[in-house]
Length: 136
Length: 136
Image (cartoon, rainbow over all chains, first blue to last red):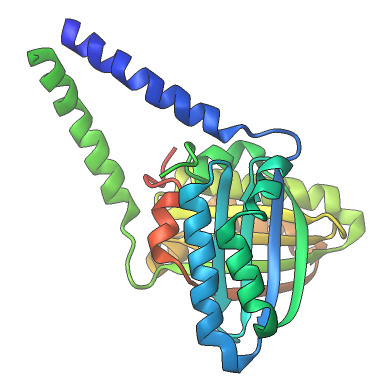
């Protein structure tokens, strides 16, 4: 029993660290970015978008979701679901090297860009759907 | 140590049940439903959409995400991110009582409906972003 208690005590800092990293507040930000890409740059753009999403979610606590998708009916229409735990997290995100590499590297590939801010409708579902630790 | 091993053994069936419930396959389905609602029905529609999303994610293994959002710039524009582990899961989902209640109950509230099928661009990020057990 003593070893089991030690095991539980060992887990506690990990759990509390993870909880601390979420820091969801009233400025939590939801967005669906609607992006149309020039066909000649599509392949290159997809790599940039993939890399920035994967790196952000892995490395930035509070970046809950950056999830890029392509329309099946039109490959050049990209939609990215973005969820940030707070505005502070978002402001930090757009200053990162990987975001700036994506932004500056794709400017000439983007035909149109509409950053559509959203309101979530089922807050209690957030921990059911999205990884509750928001870390790897 | 014996009790700790018993504790680990006790966890095993839970973990393997959860893994079994995911059953992701090559027919995994991604969609962003684009819905415009008549303003006079908006409040009522939001309740229906909230309920169907929450119930589906709680009760249907393999329904990874049904996450409804409203545009901040136009309350009547709803977007729902839907992710199903397979086409089989989706076909079962649309037969459920809660989905049929939503569908039939909101037909007259919906001005336009576009079910936009998507392709994910970062499959390896799926378990980083979405709840890896896909259950409560």
